[in-house]
Image (cartoon, rainbow, N blue to C red; front, top):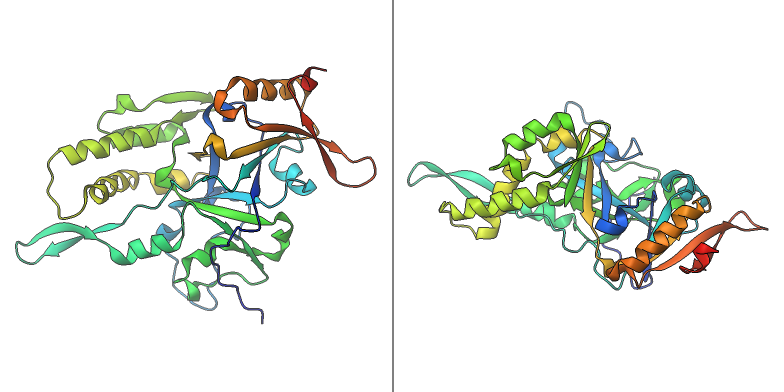
Length: 339
C-alpha cells in the first residue's frame, strides 16, 4: 500500500517564478485582487472530504475546512489543459509571480481565543486557545506549499495532520504541477456575495452604512467587508472592555465572532467569492491566451503602461506552435499591439 506523503513547506530555492491561470478580468489591473476558492467552490468533489476508513457515526469538524480558501498556482504557464479549463478556453491570461517578492505573506491566521469560567468570581473570561492556535499555525497560511499526488485519500484517522487534507490530491491532477496558498476567509480584502446575504451581514455591523456595496449584476454585490469589520474591531478596543490578552487578540476575536454569524452560510454558497490583494511588485509578467482579441490585447497593454506600479510588468501573447501541440510566447509592446 502506498503511504501518503507528509506535507511540509516546500523550499522554493529551485523556483523563482510561479503562475496563476485566470480569466481576463479588466478590473484586476486596477485592484490587483485574486480569487481564492473556499471548499464549496473547488472543482474537485474529493477536496477536503477525507476518507473515514471504516469509522462510523463520526463527522469531521466542518470548522476546520469552511473557514479557509485556496489559491491554486502552477509551476508551468504552458499547459494546454489548464489554459482551457482555468483561463476561459485560451481567452484568459496567466499571471507570473516573482517568488523573490512576498505575495500572500501578510494573510496570517488570527490567534484563537475561548471563553472559560473564572472560578474566583464565577464569570466567563476570554483566554488564548492554545490548541486551536497551534492547529491554525500548522496550516502555514499565506505560504506557497506544494501539492502531493496520491491514489489514496487523506484519512480522518490522520486528522491531526490537518495540512495533509489541504495538500494531497488524486494522481489524476498531477499534470497541473500545483502549489497552493491557504488563506483565512476572514482575512479576505473584499467579497462578492448574493444580495440575499446582505441583510444578515449588515445586521452584525456597527454602522451598516459603512458597507460599500457595488452591484455587479445577477443579484451579486462586491462589498468591502474587511475594511468595515476592522473598523468595528478598533471601536471595540476603544470601548474599554478589560481582558488579560493583547489588544490584537481581543480585536480579532471580536472580528471572528462577527464573521461567524454568517461565514459558514455564505462560504457554502459557491457563488460567494473571496478576494485577496497581491503586491504589484510581485507581478512579473502577464501572458494572454491565443484566443484573446486584439482589442483586449491593446486594453491590457494600455493598463500596464498607464498604471505606474505596473509599468515593470512584461506582456506576452500565446501562439499555437506550427509543428507541436504546445504554445509559444511572443513579447508584446504597446507599439506591437497596435500593428
